[in-house]
Structures are given as structure tokens and as C-alpha cells.
Amino acid sequence: MEYPLCLTQPVHGGTFAGSGISQSWNDLALWEAFFDSHPCASVLELGTWRGGMSVFFAVQGLARGIQVVSVDRDLGQAEGRAVGEKLGCEYLSVDLHSDGGRLEIQEVVGRLPKPLMLFCDDGHKPGEWQAFVPMLSPGDFAAVHDWGREIHEPDLVPSLPMVWGEVCEEAGSWTRFFRVP
Ligand SMILES: C[S@@+](CC[C@H](N)C(=O)[O-])C[C@H]1O[C@@H](n2cnc3c(N)ncnc32)[C@H](O)[C@@H]1O
Figure 1 (cartoon, protein in one colour):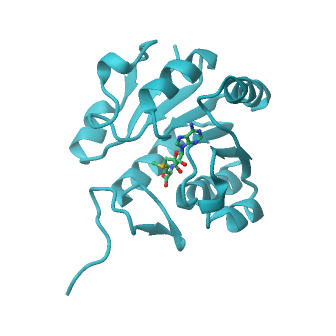
Figure 2: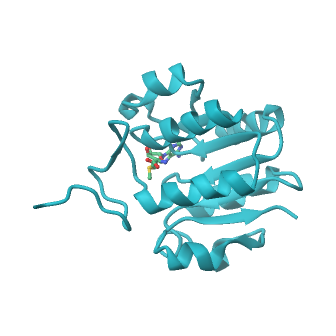
């Protein structure tokens, strides 16, 4: 029988709670374990797309008391938005790579409770990292998707220590977590 879920690679057509998601199930398992061992007070997702990941974060937020914000320049594609909002996620329409967008993210980072987790999953991950990671405070976290594909070690300016690199690699995940010392 054809099995419709891919456990190790993101597949377009994959869903979480019915909304399109660009993560694989092993990524979600890593996020679950990460939140268990690294309590976060807020999550800022850069790149909502169809919204499945924002719904996943919103469920985590409701259960664990994490404030969740998801940002995209095109929220028209975010089919998960209605359920995400019911679960407490805030959605913001922002062009991340405009001057106004950078100022807006600075304002959001400033008002979100710490420790904050910044999840870089937009269309230009090195640019996001370089623009927004410097806004983080000691004790905050950052994560990227498409590690080794769209973003690589030399793109990490400023550089941050990786958390659980071997675990993510062994899991075949494209997610990597980092901590702001
Ligand atoms: C890989 S998808 C996000 C996937 C989502 N985080 C998930 O896990 O399902 C990247 C998203 O970044 C958005 N994007 C690309 N460039 C952008 C920009 N300059 N500002 C805001 N969003 C942008 C696209 O609209 C797209 O929805």
C-alpha cells in the first residue's frame, strides 16, 4: 500500500491537522523534545506558508503557555490560519526583507516574552538569520529548516552554538537548533 506520509523528508502535500506543512514528522518529534527540555516563552515563525507548522506551534503554545506569532508576506495561502487563531497564534503580514519589515520584526521581538525561539523558515534563510538573529537576547534560541540545503555553517553570521546537532543529524532531520549564549 502506498503510504502517504514521509517520515524523514519534507514533502509538499504533507499536512499537520489538515493544513499544509513543510516539515516532516521527525522534525515535529524533535520540536516536541526540544520544548520538553528547553522551555520557551514565545515562538516567532518566519514563513507561515500554508500554516500547518503554525498550528503545530499553536497547539504547543496552548499546552505549554508559549506565545506564538507567525509571519508571512502572503497570508492568503495560510489555510491553517483560522484554526491557529482559535488556538491563540497571532498572524502578521510582513515583507521580511523590506526596511519596514525589519523594523516590525524588531518590535515583535521586543514585545515577546523571553526566552524567545526564532524559527527561520522563510524564502531566504541566510538573509533572515543575518537580519534577525542579532535582535535576540542571551538565553533566546534560534532554529532553521533546510539545514545543509538552503543554509550552511558559513551563513551563520553571527555564529551561535548548535544544540543537539548530532541528534538532528541521526534523525535525518533538516532542522537545526541554536542557543544564544
Ligand atoms: C518554506 S515556506 C514556510 C513553511 C512553513 N514554515 C512550514 O513549516 O510549513 C516559506 C514562506 O516564506 C514566505 N516568504 C518568502 N519571502 C518572504 C518575505 N520576503 N517576507 C515574508 N515572507 C516571505 C513565502 O510566502 C512562504 O510562504
